[in-house]
Length: 115
Picture 1 (tube, one colour):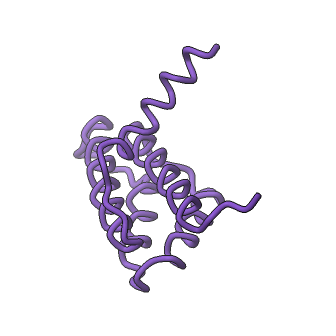
Picture 2 (cartoon, rainbow, N blue to C red):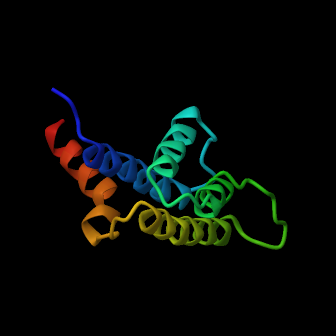
């Protein structure tokens, strides 16, 4: 059984949503998995790299800002990650729905019920 391109794009966008949620708690590790997801979505996008590069920069940003609290830095990082996620969705021609945005939270609750 083969998975279609559209299904793979949706799964990659779910991974982007996971990263957006994680970025609200601190910088995200610059993993090969994140690189792969961004490269895959770029390959199926409109050919402009800015949103993908900026998403990477924003979510992995661990720059110490002595004038900013950790809470404020996390909020700003999360907001900026969401902004770039919208741009990535547009690049691949998908509308970002509330269902997609809250997929990580819903999946977490469903997973907790199974245990």
